[in-house]
Image 1: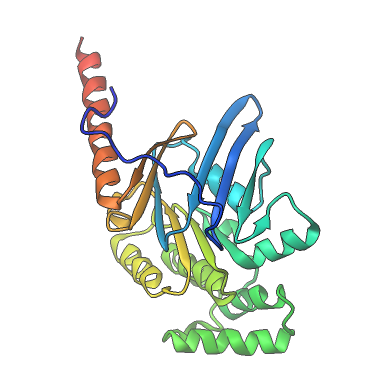
Image 2: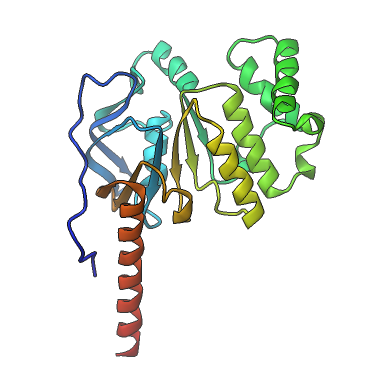
Length: 260
């Protein structure tokens, strides 16, 4: 059973004159026998954008397209002026414009200590190892985390490792951060810490995929993805309430069917 309330706001057409935007133009993505997206067109310009929807709706696939990890079979993805299917120079610039945080921090962390992990983000951009390590320590100290510099990653909690992943992205100062289910495995205190960390990242665009709607409820824009299509696109509170009501209706219908 679908959402039966008032019509929801739908995506606006792409404005080709908007600079430094993320644009998907008639994108088709096929993975195996599954057509993930079919002619998807989007423009993502707001500072805070949420993605909601069921598992398999296309949220992680959208992030992989924007970060250049996947390429569309048709259409194109342009991120802050860089075509993800463009030249090698475009692809190098793309990694400086966009940072992707995976659901599991252990899939992302490479180095044994916090400072080394942060420094790697800078050496990958051409800084010397010594300068990168010094900057990593300064970066942690500026955030009241100087004691973390020499800590072993293996000694950190899940929430702390998630913080390290985000710090490693932030130190490189990409224009856009893509966070894939960052709150999923965190306790309430760790969620609150991570939410504060995101609130303080005022100079970066942040796109968050989550099932925990309260974390994107106040975002200026939230997209509800359903089977690779945009079901609704609008202010966070409107879209989150509509999606939550849809889930309640579907759950009630399943309970009713089970009793029949």
